[in-house]
Image 1 (cartoon, rainbow, N blue to C red):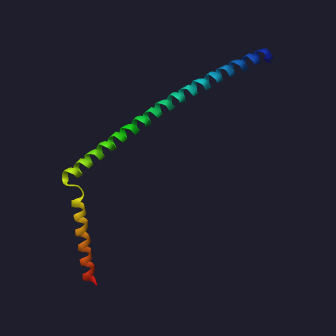
Image 2: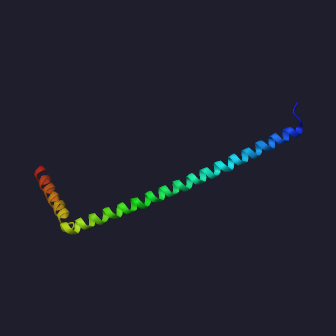
Image 3: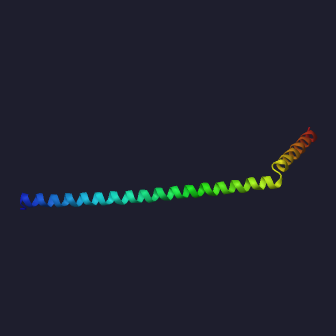
Amino acid sequence: MIETKTMKNIIKVLGIFGTLAIVYASGYFIKLYINFTQLILSLGIAGILILVAFLYIYNWMLIKSGGDSDRDQAIDLTRDYMREVEKKLK
């Protein structure tokens, strides 16, 4: 049978090994979390920059093409056409 002193030493070694494993795993997951957070942050910043660029280009195109007047005119023509169709159907 194993002596109690030897059992205590084995338990101490297992406890130290378990503690080191937990500390190492915790450090690893903290490192992953930091890298993941940096990745999400950089993707968010890139997305915002792309959105700003698209909005700038869209605004520039609206100014260059004369704004919303063409769209408003198309809406008015469509509305007038639908009114004529409704009158014909009545």
